[in-house]
Image (cartoon, rainbow, N blue to C red; front, side):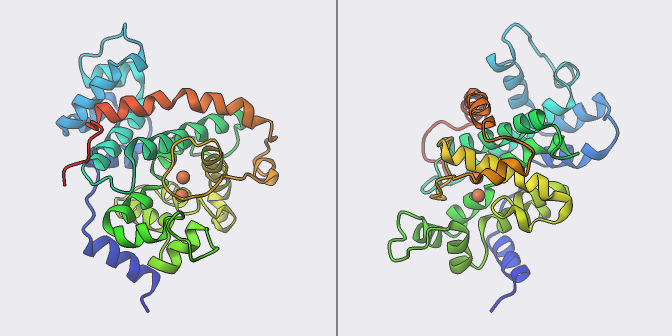
Length: 298
Ligand SMILES: [Fe+2]
Ligand SMILES: [Fe+2]
């Protein structure tokens, strides 16, 4: 019987998972520094011509107001600000990463809508509640990446992924995706994604937010609130069918999930339309990132 670290090593090494654009990783790692210099950030982004051209297309898209024209990355960083550019780069790097694979079991628009929905919902709730984490700049990225483990199993362990998809799992009464993954793979998708993000050198807060998105009470004290936030928003998106990643969960939200964050369940009605409003972003990002709706080449 392999230990957990051995299982993770086996999956990540043997399957040789690709990495995302190093530009996105470098920007995320440099977040802890003081306000980064515009020129330095622009230089880092310019090292990846594909990301550079996608960022400019996105900055010049209707999402950012068609009247403004950004002619260079430096101009975009200066006018949109480092945080916005960072989010753009990570989102586009993830689209670029996702579209280079098979989509037999993961539907990119559904996967991406769910990721953007959770990312935006976390930011929205955090700004309403205003107390969830000191690392509010990392919420968007955590939401964006939280279900990457589902993409990994669909592409690198397709047989077992298919076998445990809740609709195929008729023999068992057990529809808990986390339990099913642990029984059949030895790891669940939150553990897989967290291990992958750790290898990519992303900050611990991001790794832990992703790791505990299905079991927030098990999170270390320092990231408990953050984990409770992602748990809440993830369930909210599942309940209202904001994208999906084949977890087969109905997104029931216990009242305590709201209360523990200092929120009333009434917040659901207020926040939901705001989350839905940002879903058009996922379509624009997918199209700029190269998704054309066809099955990807491998
Ligand atoms: Fe999940
Ligand atoms: Fe999710």
